[in-house]
Length: 93
Image (cartoon, rainbow, N blue to C red):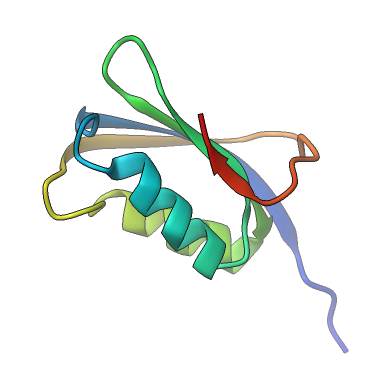
């Protein structure tokens, strides 16, 4: 029996990602993957996503962030490992 590896990452998504349901779509995808965290718009027009959970699920979300919803035009996604912030569920801010 193997233990599940838990990972937490902060992603910054740039491009046309505000006003196109990016946060709501990210929330739906993250919840489907069983992740905890949040997505929020930032003043510079980017979206910050914090996700914690199974390492494979966090990686899958990171790949999906390059696509986003149909109306999004993602130009860059950066990721950094972070400490678990103890969030419950996945929300938008």
